[in-house]
Length: 218
Image (tube, rainbow, N blue to C red; front, side, top):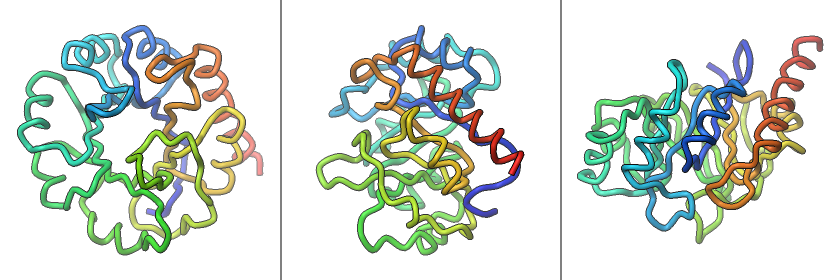
């Protein structure tokens, strides 16, 4: 499978902390929501909040748990308490760690200078997808900044989830240029960290739909 693929672009709203934001995202038609379990993050949720968010979702919306170099016991504790469908690893986790929880997983790749995405894809061949995010030394994610989309090759063997600084004003262009399997947004639809803005949520989804419509007519 190439970086893109046939059909519509999927959408994940990440950093969800409130049940009402999860319900609104689902009503807009998102495919997945992300729960952050990385303690330093301003979007981090505890187990009770995560359960409330998961309970607000209808069937067929994927619940993703995001971890950053977490101890194995910590991930297992979350899995025992929250119905996660997919795991997202945002640190330096090796493949044997990522595949050791009985769940499909996405491996995030911070687009630092010189990263070889073909080599990463070969190393994490069992991953469901690669999530490409902006590199900043002090932040494992949620930078609010985009990277050079021209760095994404079109012949990767894994689906590409494009992240990093996406917002209503640039997501359609990002889709046209990268043709990813999915897009992932957090800060670009927020009122403040962890609190989503209803108008921005709706505008982002509309721009994704517009990009798909334009691609279909091209």
